[in-house]
Image (cartoon, rainbow, N blue to C red; front, side):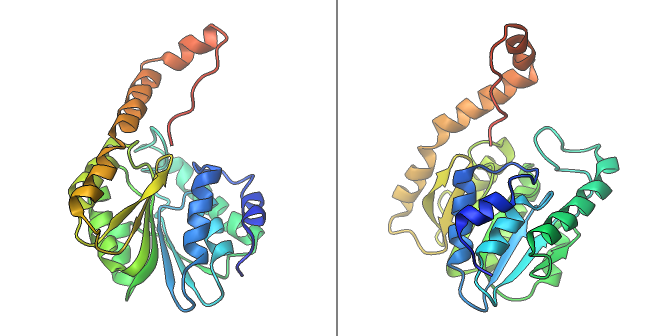
Length: 245
């Protein structure tokens, strides 16, 4: 079903989610390069914004698996727990959005947590997009266990990198000095890795460590917004910065 990026971006204009134009382009390019007969796995779909971009970019014959329990936890910025009442609505909107975009028949949705989903997916993965739980332990498990499935030459994309403390710590543990993943770059908080041994592990690590000032700026902004910076700016008639993503 591969289509142009402009059409894909237009298709998700009204779909809720945290994804910039540049991040969508990175997802689109990775999916479009997936070989026929290959597989794309997405960890964390919310209401389908990224899922639709991946499905519209992927060539015919590529399997697309979206893993999201729609359980009301790890739902979005500052929405870690306590949103069980929204879970059913998230799930219904996810399905409706895929149907409206014309990709429902291309996507296999596993409504379960990512650790349980591993038993339901056999074989390698050509493109892995991780935007699941942002706490350190589950984020590390996703990068370690699902990352081990990425075929040589495949692509790993990690959302909220150098933005979320948990995700960034997991990257530091699993990918910073990796023997199997090379850091390609990032689009804001979307980090891109290729499943190939880095030419120099030290240089690969330094390129990732160079993102830390941006990470510290994001954390500082998040703390300031949590402590009420947004309310102060609104009272002063000033624009409120977006939550970093």
